[in-house]
Length: 467
Image 1 (cartoon, rainbow, N blue to C red):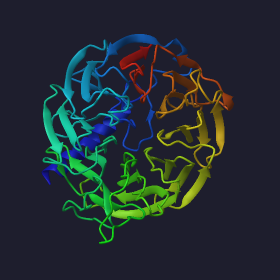
Image 2: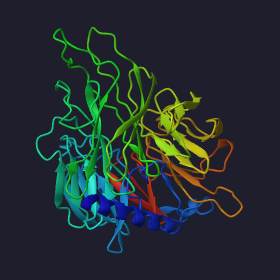
Image 3: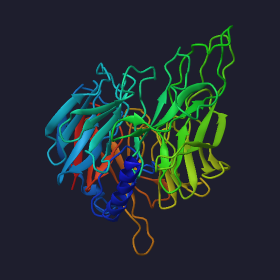
């Protein structure tokens, strides 16, 4: 009960922070907020001044190549810092004004320097009465928390040996300060429920809620995924695994959590289930028990929903390898589908009644949130290196002015490392206002805070761009 009261107080703090967002908002998690809308309402960067952005600093992070994670930006003791996961398995803290290193800790990801080794993005949480923490998933099958000031490890989940899959998803912090994370069962395991309540079906993965005060799991829901193939004895058969589940999206107003489901376990000689989809649960932000809401599945060719859903305006927006879909948040009823807009990894952003998406065919697109009809598309399908434009998720900054005009700026990274900025109020074919190309600028997600754009480069460097 003490923890619940403390966590409830965090909601009041979050509400006060939103009032200040128009001036300078910290970018505390990969989706900016728990709903994964990736919309930062600050006004430091606008369509009129984004063309003046230039490099403020560049810092060499460990590993020498790009991580696909998104930086987190937080103000601690009145100083702004950037936290970034590196490709060789470290978590670094740097000053946001200079890029100077403060500390680096091994996040147990056992990186080899290969791009994409660290795909979990850091998230910042300050539980009431507790220490500001950096939480991140690890390739050693745990979720870790570190003291944001000192880098000292505070807790690990699970606390002992883990038989989960490596954690490639990113933690989501709820308004009341719980840590939500999606974790898969290790291939070949018996798929037990780990003694957690609410398990159903053949358990291959789970949405876990962790109390940041002590790192204990609180109210997890075991999840069944499509057809689970069995051996001659009826036991779950080892296959290709269940990688591909998304990070959770959480509606703080309703307590609903939405997760893209992973690919189906595939066993040689057996016909695979090629469907995947989105699962909706209710997980009260006071720590109450999880409950099932609905599930929707469709044929995605056996590829999981790795892009985090976004929830806004009573709708859940889900991107898959063959479509972008919207569902009624309460009932799960399909509202709209756009098969021209699809992305395996890029999660949709939502702002001002518009959905923004990076796509596998190389475009950044804006769609009407009510109908998913196209409003505009970027002017080029492929960049100069013939790579898809959008491998990370778009981020939107700005706010409605008094006349209802939407001067939002949409940032997205490209396959060759460019960061492209679009005027969200465009139509038809929308050409980027500015393209930041600084020797391999971006591969992971963009974070924007205080009018500064932070992105980790394809060359393993962390860069900041401002006016």
